[in-house]
Each structure stands twice: as structure tokens, then as C-alpha cells.
Length: 545
Image 1 (cartoon, rainbow, N blue to C red):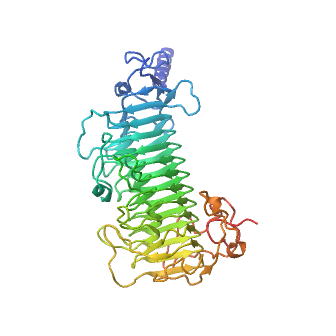
Image 2: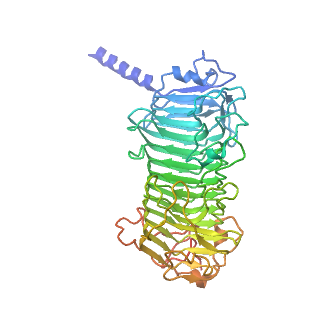
Image 3: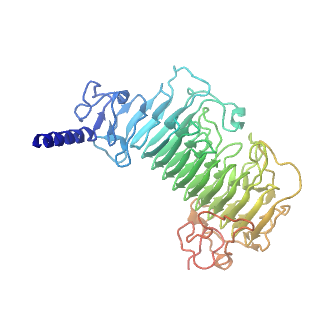
């Protein structure tokens, strides 16, 4: 009996020791793939060695700090657990934000995570730029700084990316130029380099519990951070994109399709649609959603979006529900500020600040679409379906005299609320058509269930006289911004208390709308974090006594 107990304890102890997490070290110059790899003094050399290892929950893969690996890091069918995720990071003495470098020229991706669970990757810098002698591959290939993908009909979860730098990602060799027709296509038709991409390649696949945080994505030929899944199944759910800097992307800064339950906050997106490299697409909004649901987009900064079409600060493309943009700062975006396309339901812009958005003029410098300050569109692909229950309130909009503020409202929009906004338009406001792939045709005005009240206009030219809907109780006057030439939210604090303070109306639910805004109609704080007490002020900022 004692012998049996001893053997049982030995088996238990042996099993426990076998499952103890391991740390594997990698060094591109001091390492050797014949080493054990489990001590700093005997690291592996090649990241490709990962393919031969049996990675268990809790294991760590650590790359030497300030060293460059000229190969891709691939994690294929590797699974951690909720309590013990797989960690990919760095080792060695760190100074400030030092990273390990992954620099690929031949492989398509700097990092590939495929059909894997419970993965956490941090503290790496990734670039993927082809060498001059590299042959161009298949027509539909792409190159990504980081690609996370699912090809099996399963759910893969807990995929976290943090403190990464992804920069200089291109598919084509330097010197390649894109045609104007390429820029006019919906998303581009040729090969591109992308920053960070999440893609489900199987209709039954799901990527769940995703985070991209505290990272920098810069100088890529298309989108900075992109989530793509089957729109009907919502193949990407429960995600966070926060505290990132997305700079000089050739396409949009951040984009998602077929995604549900997302929170996007505290990001800085600047110069999306960049044209500083001929390989870039040259068009893109700071952020846009398509076929997505339950997305809260707040406290972000969207500036200097460029392009002949689209290229708003942040816009809601068609087939979405419950997309809410609040507390964002949007400035100098060619395409505009607020854009809600067709077949969208219960979407909102509230407590945002817009500065000189929508300056683009059709047929000038190759533009094929007007820039617009405010746009409700019926475009939803082949069939026009007006957006339903669109809420637009307590926004502050400043447009300098050199820019015509252009407005477009589709004739079949259903349920429109416009209230408590500041339209500080120094020039002229005019109506235009939402003209792009399928322009609205003439027909009867069918807009219904409108609540358009209590907005502050600089003068009677600040809203188009020819518009079919007009404010029922307009207020006219100068909000007297603290610094209208500034570039920070607080610069647009109104000084005219008598005109602003406690002059707002309590926002009602649109007639015939049974949902409202899923995050609640009434906010407790303004864009600066000031408490909203009693009646709201007009605009995005509460005037403090």
C-alpha cells in the first residue's frame, strides 16, 4: 500500500513538473538552434525554431531587446489558456520603450497568428518592406505587419497586442505608382501593405476578446488597424482598440467589418489617406465601420484625412446598428465630419467637436465626391435604404469663412434628431447630393419623424435655406470660442454664457423609435469631463461657473 501511494505521488509530481511553463529565448546573433533555448545563456537563433517546439499554456517566447530578426514570427495552432496565456515579448535590459525588431523582406507577414488562442504579444517593432530584387507575387496577395486569422470553423479568443510599433509595411517595391482609377475603386484592387489585420477566412470562424492597445502604426500603404469578418455572423466580437497612434496610412486609420461589441477609445489618427509614397492608396477616413453593431467610439482624435472620396474624420458606412461616436475631436478632414450611410439603425454623433471638416470640392484636384460637414445617405450598395433613427446632438462645429459648409440629407431618411448643436459657420452653408457610386436620384421628399430644434447658428446662412428640414426653434449668435484658430478641444470653449449655458433641451427619443441609443440618451459629462447639471448647455462643452 505504501509503495502504491509513493508511486502515485511520484506520477503526480512528475506530471506537474512536466506542465510547468517554460520560457524560450531567441537571439539572432548569439543564439544557436541547437541550444536548449530555455536559458538566456543558451538562446535559440531563429524564430522559425518555434515551429518545432511543443508550446504549452503559460509558455513565453522572448526576443532579445534591441536585436533585429530578419524573418517572420509565426504562431500556428498554438493554444494558451485563460489562466496561462502564451506570452511573446522581450528579454534583456530595457531603456524606456526599447523593442526587439522583426524586419521581413521576403515573408508576407512580420507576425502571423493563425487558429490560435490566448496569445499576448508586446514590445516588438515590426516592418515588412520588400527588397528591390524581390519578385512580385500573386495578384490578391497582401503583406501585413501583424496578421491574426482564423481558417477553421471554431472560436479563437484572448488575442492581445500591446506596445507594438508597426511601420513601413508595403507590398510593392519602392517606386511603384498607383493609378487614379485605383483610388476611385471601393477599397483598392491591387496588392497592399497593412498594419494590423484580424481576418476570419471561414464563415463559421470567430475571433473573440481582441485587444490592440498602446501601439503605433505608421507609414503603411493601406489601413492601419483593420478587422474583417462575415457581416451576418459577426465573426469578430468583444474587442477593444485603445491608446494607439495611427499615422500616415495610405488608407483609413481604423476600420471594421462584420464586428460586434467594440470599444474604440483614446486613439490618435492623423493623416489617413496619405500620399507621401506612390505605393499608398491615397484615400481614407480616420475610422469607419461597415456591417457592424454595438460599437462605442469615444475620446479619439481624427485629423487631416485626405482623399478624393470618403476621407471623413470618422464615418458610419452602411448596414450598421448602434454605432455611437462621442467625445471625439475631428479636424481638417477633407471628406467631412458626420456621415451616416444607408441601412443604418440607431446611430449617433454627440458631444464631438469638428473644426474645418469637409473642405473638399468635387472636381477640384481630382476629387470625385464633395466634402460634407453633415451627411445622411441612403446608399447601401445596390439599393437605397435611408438611415433610420439618426441622433445628432450637442456637437460643436466650426467652419472658417474660406470653406463652404456642405450638407446632404437623403430624401428617404427615417427618424432624424438634430438638437443642441453649435453650427458656427463663418461662410455659407449649402445643400449638395451624396454623390459617389450610386448618387441619389430626384424624387419625392419622404423624410419623416424629424426632431430639429434648439441649435445655435452663427447667422441665418449657417444652415442651407433650400434644405427641406429647418430648425423649428433656432438660436442665432456668436458662441465666442476661446480660440477659434486652436487645435485642441478646450480652444472651442464658448465664452458667451448668456447664449449657451442651460439653453439646451432634454434629448427625447425619436418618434416611433423603440430603441433610442443603447448606451443611453443622456450623458453625465461633456467632452472635457465637466459635469452636466440640470439642462444641458448648447454644444459639446459645458460652461463652468
